[in-house]
Structure formats: C-alpha cells, structure tokens
Length: 217
Ligand code: C5P
Image (cartoon, rainbow, N blue to C red; front, top):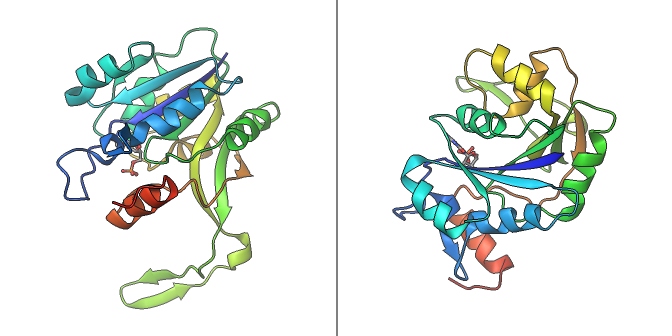
C-alpha cells in the first residue's frame, strides 16, 4: 500500500490573518485542499492521512469526513511521526507532503513513488537560480558550485520501515524527514520537482498562488 501524508499541523501565521496559512481560503478552497485533492485523485495513492493541530481537528474532520485525520505535534517531525504511526500494517511506501505546497502535481507524485522501487528514500528538489553563499557573521565563508546544489521540496517518499526506524532512532529536531534517514547512513535519491510546487510562506507567496488560481486578491 502507498500512503500520502499531508502535514497541516503548523501554526505559521505570517499573513496578518488569524488562521494558519494552510487553512486560508483561495476561491473558497483552503490551501490544504489542493494537495489533499491531488493526492486523493492519484491512482497510485491508496489512502491520504491529514495531520492537523488539535484546534483544527474538529473542523477538518467535518470537512474531510472520508479521510483519516490525525493530531500533529509541536514540531514538523512530531507531526510526520503522528501520521506515520497511523498508517496501517500493509503500508510499504509513504509520501510525506507539506500542505503549504498546493501545486504538487501528479507527475511529481508518480516519479516519487517509482523512485521508491529501487530506493528507500527520495526527495523532490529543483535547481537553484541564485548563487548560494555560506555566511558566518558578516562574512562569506563558502560559495558552493551552483550546479551541484538543489532546493528541496516535498513530497518526500520513503520505504515505510526505513522511515519508521529513522524516526525512532533520531534525537533532536529536523526540518524535514530526509535528514532523519540520512542519519541512518542512507543516501536518498532526488527527483526533479517544479518551481510551481513552491511553499506558501509569505504574503507574496500567497498572492502568487492567487494569481495562478486566477484570483486577483
Ligand atoms: O513551517 P513550515 O512551512 O516549514 O512547515 C512545513 C509544513 O509542515 C507545513 O505544511 C506545516 O503545516 C507542517 N507542520 C506540521 N506540524 C508542525 C510544523 C509544521 O504539520 N508542528
């Protein structure tokens, strides 16, 4: 079985709205609805689990009565683990996706799942257009060659047993799940994502999403 876990338990409120960004509505649809719908309509995904914070559990459970809704945790890692432990025993592949990336598409999902035939961990990533510099205080201390850099996106896909083991062994916090399997000594694969699969973080990102969806404000 292949499970999609949509992480929507963050409390990020950076738009001056009073609700977390993934629950903001564009054209009367919550931001999380776009990725939930794409995963749910993909024939390679058997079940979608939505992870939300406790305050939103009742509302989202009502709106998504056919889905498994799980309470997330303090950190992204806690939330992905909360989703992982509710996967049923027949799960062999799992894709973990940020609900704040509404424009994930079917080809990204399918490429991730296919990559898991021969790899136990895969992330989505895109080339970087800017030159990236490493800094310390006011100084540049490293300028990595841009051609070997990528910006990570989600979904991130895993062999289920591998990601469970990684979560159980890892101590500390991590901004994503790939970090956890790397600590096991695994070299994850990457597949190419899309600039459209950006994460909504700022008001500018929200406005970009509205433009893509044909809404002016
Ligand atoms: O904060 P950031 O944008 O990096 O979060 C990435 C994703 O992880 C978001 O979709 C957010 O809702 C989710 N998240 C979560 N539980 C947390 C923190 C973040 O599900 N405690």
